[in-house]
Image (tube, rainbow, N blue to C red; front, side):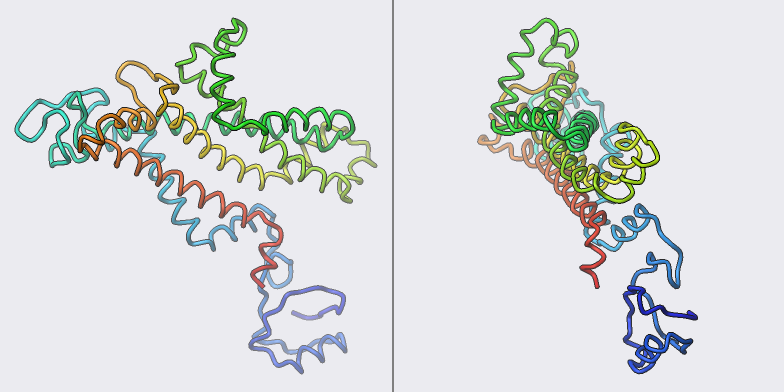
Length: 351
């Protein structure tokens, strides 16, 4: 390090440098021997490579041990559920032969690790097959809802005026109703309209459930993106884009939305959690999807156990709920890690 300008705002770790050395270098603006002087953050561009915001966020995320452990568990869980034939010992609807150790409602054993259900099917295998449908529903809902919410929020925040008022009042109306009430009302109303039933399919189908959850899941994302856009649209780089003749569409999709990717990714993780829990809740009350003959979801497994758990068949509810809770908790921790990593004040808080 050759020269330090007194106008440069650097965050220095002075634990090993003598204070007189630093003061002399700053006051005289001359070369000084600053051996042992380190930078807390190389992203400032002095003493290290310049990092992009994404790489800087990735570095911050990797420092979060809880988020990293949750990410590893989540990736493993998602992989095993999306490819259930790898961990499963039997087919999804395969019935075990009745023996002294395997019979209907048999407790966990070597032949059936999680026990069996009323049809003598292996619960261990069915938990992974059910997770495949539940996780796919959560991912599909998150993609659709976040895409719609991002577009609505970006339009409302950038255009402002009457369009902003209209879009936000629609958002407020949806947010004013309890989510479960909204889902049940929309489920019955949309299923009776020929226009929507043609596009969404039967109200017991997985496609209908994905579109239904997406219809009530975009509002929170829209409000978050709108807030970010409002804080960005008067910044210098946006004014520079306007001055060179950039169109509103280009500014939104090339500058505003990319700079809002941090909150969008956090919202997407929360949308996955919300969709999985909403599907499980609806299935528990008998309004969930029917993925097909012999197919199941985590919500259906839990719903099927509500009439048998009081009879002592505890494994029918414990294992599906355990997989559901572990997945939801890991996604929440990953979302918290993403929020902290993309928070521009995160680096200052570590000083």
